[in-house]
Image (tube, rainbow, N blue to C red; front, side, top):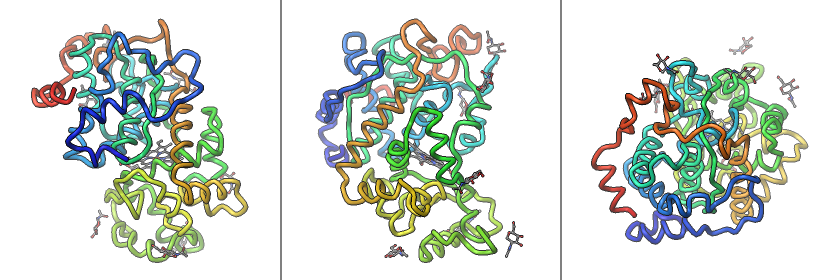
Length: 357
Ligand code: HEM
Ligand SMILES: *[C@@H]1O[C@H](CO)[C@@H](O)[C@H](O)[C@H]1NC(C)=O
Ligand SMILES: *[C@@H]1O[C@H](CO)[C@@H](O)[C@H](O)[C@H]1NC(C)=O
Ligand SMILES: *[C@@H]1O[C@H](CO)[C@@H](O)[C@H](O)[C@H]1NC(C)=O
Ligand SMILES: *[C@@H]1O[C@H](CO)[C@@H](O)[C@H](O)[C@H]1NC(C)=O
Ligand SMILES: *[C@@H]1O[C@H](CO)[C@@H](O)[C@H](O)[C@H]1NC(C)=O
Ligand SMILES: *[C@@H]1O[C@H](CO)[C@@H](O)[C@H](O)[C@H]1NC(C)=O
Ligand SMILES: *[C@@H]1O[C@H](CO)[C@@H](O)[C@H](O)[C@H]1NC(C)=O
């Protein structure tokens, strides 16, 4: 299924990625999987090559990259705004509460951008790199592949307060989660489906410790499996600083599969926002959890559709925005031109890149 089984045939994987396993019938009006077919035909292989290399030493990188795309799309659309650092007029989204000390993978995005600029200068947006990276992450973890609609352009702005407002919190109840997705044009099925990305990656104790000791009336969250509760209490002591990490998926922590949903059925969801999908009495999300738990293909098909839908949110196209030369800065800024050659990938990365395509 995933490329992990195909380590020696990376080129084959890249070809499969390029072709895509699923044919998709509807795209946002302006996006097109063939957008770079002439201007940067090797783009999918390059993105794959850099992430594949990074995953050899960091099995979590795919999870971190999928999350980056999600955090980009929910804040003024999929426009690369999350990548902008503080500088000039930019107040970075990276310092918003849901991002601070928790988003990862910015350096790998820069490595990809450097590699892409070598091959096809000033052509590919950082927002598209995030969308492609999310697809590679799913595939490398053993999840579905798909043809990624492309042609996004990069924003000239970021919005830290909007990041605080739009990104859902782990303590949200089901109503709040649905509302937060509805703002983005995403429905209840999208919510349950995309939450399945918590099939891999990690979370800090601080994001769920409220469930472990005094959730209500001095007791832990009653919708948390007591065996799991005991394990989590060891990792996250009551008066700890919340900085320990644990797997989002108790059973298959680095694999992209449907065990996330099986976990929820056994009260083994890590975040409150995970478990409420199954444990909110009478909720319309329960049947969806059950169906994904019993049919991984159904989950994968829905995941592809919901990722494409999320990837369409608020995109800039045509002459809107720009193609950034460095993903952390808008163009034409003295600081960004100083860094113009500053996609600081090592020679090693470039070598690996060239040998991966
Ligand atoms: C439904 C609302 C969601 C909430 C409340 C939520 C919240 C969180 C939180 C609190 C973490 C742990 C962060 C940390 O402690 O460092 C996390 C991690 C993660 N989230 Fe979500 N998330 C949601 C939806 C999504 C979606 C839609 C995706 C992608 C499609 C996603 C992908 C991930 C991944 C892969 C990780 C692990 C990242 C890593 O290991 O670096 N999440 N999420
Ligand atoms: C951008 O900010 C991040 C921290 O959010 C930092 O790690 C990175 O080095 C910065 N990038 C550049 C090119 O200054
Ligand atoms: C570019 O960034 C530098 C460094 O943060 C800042 O001083 C300058 O005002 C910015 N210029 C523009 C045009 O945004
Ligand atoms: C950020 O978003 C908020 C809410 O939509 C808006 O009121 C504000 O003007 C935006 N700020 C910037 C800097 O774009
Ligand atoms: C969810 O939280 C909101 C805000 O705190 C609250 O108004 C609402 O009653 C809660 N809904 C449920 C179903 O608990
Ligand atoms: C639990 O929290 C409530 C409200 O925050 C507080 O009144 C109560 O004393 C706490 N109980 C225990 C056992 O810590
Ligand atoms: C981290 O977890 C270990 C157990 O795995 C625990 O002994 C330690 O106190 C925890 N540290 C913090 C800061 O929570
Ligand atoms: C708790 O989790 C274990 C597996 O980790 C499972 O066997 C058990 O049935 C779960 N308990 C409940 C109440 O779901």
